[in-house]
Image 1 (cartoon, rainbow, N blue to C red):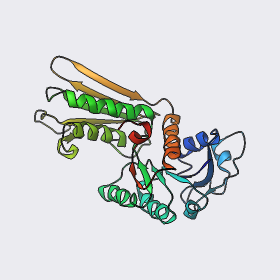
Image 2: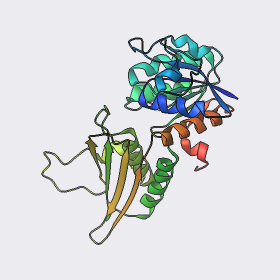
Image 3: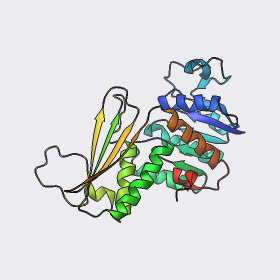
Image 4: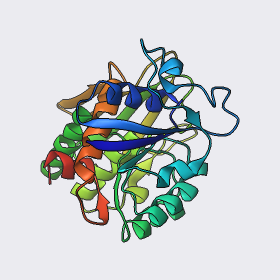
Length: 268
């Protein structure tokens, strides 16, 4: 039995993960943490989720729960909370699954540094489908030359803060890596206020925010004569939650290091 604490427990992803844990036969929720201004602090997390029964775990704002009886921490908080969470998990030698997006370079470096002490799986999108898409896109990019222009379109709900999405950036990085190029050198956020032709090997990313879209991503490779499109459409947040749960079960037995869903799925 894997005992799990969820950080960001009352957010969209936190709720989806806890719902999956409540139905699992080999994982158990032992902690649910949110920020101190959450109006649901003190309530049973099962009640917050609207489940048929209480889970016996209250939503708390005390991060010290991370260090108590926890095998794995799943972190879906915000960038502003990540540094503190890394320090706490490192102190308690607790493996981490990190799904926080919108991180800066300094935070990415801190994840790498902390992974020398504890096992960490950092992934911008933990669905099986998206990670298969990443693998396919990388393989295609090795085959197609600069005659094929690459565009990524991502669509999310109106409440999503970061843009472009972490998944869109991950797709762009996978394409750049396949071409032995630096993503930052070839990434073009849009063509607004641009009056120059498209440069070879550039990667365009367009973001759409509206309604209740969970997460749609489409990658197109287009030449003058033909076009290839690969898409992933998230129909339920459960696809991300199930991926995070699979990652938690996998990482519980790993040595310190920095891992991705490729390791969990055997795609490397």
